[in-house]
Image (cartoon, rainbow, N blue to C red; front, top):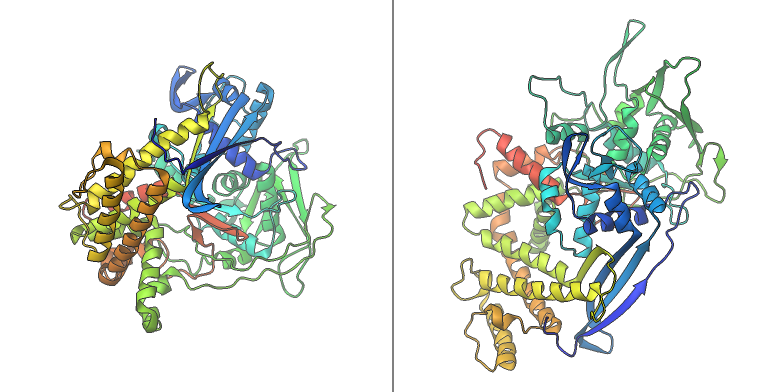
Length: 623
């Protein structure tokens, strides 16, 4: 049981709503992703057997249906009490999902359509079966990681999954209309999507070797862009055909939620003149679904037409047009090992085009041309010419440039190695630990299948989770203190005397009030358990002041040396920052909602960066 100050208040609210569905009968994307992640957190992913094979980190149809039958998601948020700003109020909201077994199976089918899960025993199957074994896809792991991070959830039981399976490192999100959840289609959105689709260089699959690639390498190759091939047609070589694999690629690396939506995006590529049909070798009695999209034309010499169609059959072969190659900037692409990295920022939210699907007009929506505003890229902010132009705000700009580096996992890992080599790694370690601590303090959530209430039991699952979380926060707060700030600690920071004195005075005041003892500079576990949420918030404010001080120190002392190192320059080339134009999709770890944006998996990116460092010739092996 945790000790909670009487000033801390707790409000319990219960919320339940019907999931909104589109005209096609599928749930809205946000509800689909939230329910998927809540289900996975509630499951115990174990090893299952089917067809004499074993599948680790998997779940069965029965397990998914049982949890979805009554699934509870509790979220607790801390904030100032409106009546007394010095106190903390905790609001816990519990959302209950309830559905029959048939509804649960239908929901899991939506998860499969969105490429969040797949049949472990039959990866080619698109049907969620009554007795099946299922695993998470790389896209599903990406969605799950972001959900856990956003909601402050305990994911210790999921770490084996993240460590053993590929994760979609960069997922392209397409903005949707709030009324019907349809993707907003504009020229800027199609440009961003197409560049991500084809990659910065043509992606021809590597030749098969004696040792087939492992799952991580195979997925990395696919992430560069849709696989292309050369086809001979009437003795004429036709290059770059994207056929049925186009739909699979769009489902795996973007936020589209099924083959229908993927086919509509492919039809938009045809409409915008980026791909074109070369041949369709279906026989007379072969059927195929043909998706047609319509919209306005901008006029002039634009390759955009009023309609485009895409044929969903493996017998249809499409090629990248000259306009598509120009838009993809293949001629300008460098030989970067990560040739699919894209970097475009859509800074203005354009109006919607007057589009229709399968001939059904969407009225009341005016067409408008999309505008792409070029922003200053990270590469320019880091180079010397840009520094010279910002001499008046040197300290501020250096801090901003350091924040850019800390937001990109690959740069951050290199910066950590640099600091470690210069014996000042504790500055970055403290900054990152406090960032994680602040995030966990503000929000905590839990997901579990509801169990029957026991007679005489007190509290709710949300309240119990909150108490456990509070105890963990106290331990984390003083682990940070004992590691970085206590006198003669193992990684003691070199900080301003005034900051150290303010921290010592506050802890001395609290310890004297709680235990009647003077503070000797050390905090043991028995003393720490008495802290309440309000006192933790004050401690966080003191930690934040120290964070700011440490960040400025790193920006002024370490950053100028780091950006001149060869490993950093190599990383810029590897990430496409060295010479890439600043007109693709902006990378975000916590994005707002522009028409198109990319989210980055921190776990997947750091793992790929470690692999890249091992593969670089002459690179030291860093643990």
